[in-house]
Structures are given as structure tokens and as C-alpha cells.
Amino acid sequence: MKNSLIAALVAASVAVVATPSAQARDGIGAGGAAALGVLGGLAIGGAIASSQNDGGYYPGRPVYRAPRPVYVEEEVCHMERRGYVDAYGYEHIRRVRVCE
Image (cartoon, rainbow, N blue to C red):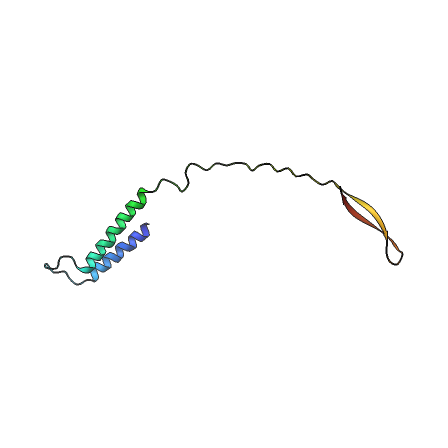
């Protein structure tokens, strides 16, 4: 917010300096009027924005709640040796995991 306000003030001062010298019969030049309009808009906009700030985005304070417990039934597994005969007639023994 401060950076944009500073940038607006610099732009307004450049606009005022860049305009030709004002004459008594003209009053405020076109650049000066534009700069005053921009500054007034920034001031009013800042006042409106700061008046609506209630201190945070969420009502109340954050509350930590632990997740619900999850009950998982574990499988009972063990290793067994099982034998099998292949196509050539050879017997092989493997360790196989068996879950109930």
C-alpha cells in the first residue's frame, strides 16, 4: 500500500512539474486537476479499505481438532514352505506368504 501511494505521489509531482506554468486567470491546470483527483481517490480508497479491516480473514480463532480414530483390522500373515512339481517332473520348494 505504501509503495503504491509513493508511486502515485511521484507520478502526481511529475504531472504537476510537466505542465506549463499556470496563469492567474486559468486557476489549476489540467495536469494539476488530474493529480488532485488521483490523490483524493487514493486517500478515500485507503480510508474505506482500512475501515473494513476487522483484524483477520476468518471469524474467531483457529481451533485444532484431532482427526477421528481409524480402526484397521490387520491381516495375520505368515510364511510357509510349499512344494510343487514343474512340467519336467522336478520338485521345487518355495516360501509363500499366507494371509488369513
